[in-house]
Length: 161
Image 1 (cartoon, rainbow, N blue to C red):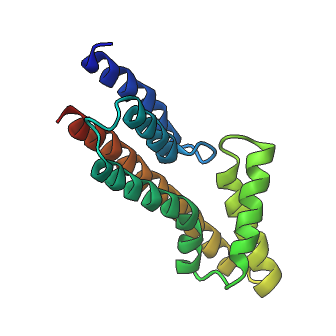
Image 2 (spheres, helix red, strand yellow; image 1 turned 90 degrees about the horizontal axis):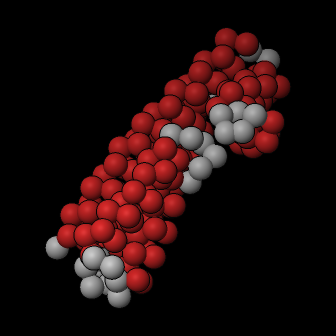
């Protein structure tokens, strides 16, 4: 197969990863890394070498950390108590089960809110913590969107060399 066609097909296969960067249930950048890894094996790492895969792997790890930590960090910034993140995590998981793929966002908000109400019995504090958790999640989605686009651009640049 012509290499350029192979590169285009691989790049198109990565596009759902960009969508997955903003949908909480889809692992966008890890999916893109898997496609890049398959590309490397099929191409015998002729165009995309180990250094390129290492760079893409670092982007993937950063994306995963942001994906899992952004809502919790936002809630902590908003004054959430030390253990409220467990309630937020539980709400996120329950929300994803009940209303996939977007249920995790309101689930996180509700989980943080309920956790704060149970711990501090202060609705204002709970609302602030839950709102910051929600905003942290949105910020994480935007950062992951940027990282997924960066991943695709770097992949194409490294694979064309």
